[in-house]
Length: 64
Image (cartoon, rainbow, N blue to C red; front, side):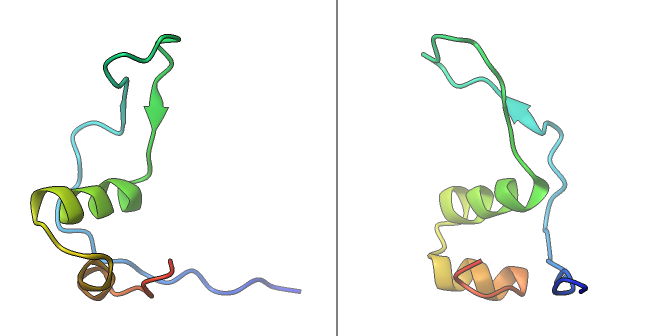
């Protein structure tokens, strides 16, 4: 049985970096994030949008 078709998302900026190591992380392990995850952070933190507005901008359901 085929799964649900993946929905296209709108991303405003393709990030230069796709992983980072937060300050204070004892192990030093990098955290890898998808482009979608980084776009959500950009829209929430830099643009000041709430979850509903981010979902509308990206063309996805808020619960996604």
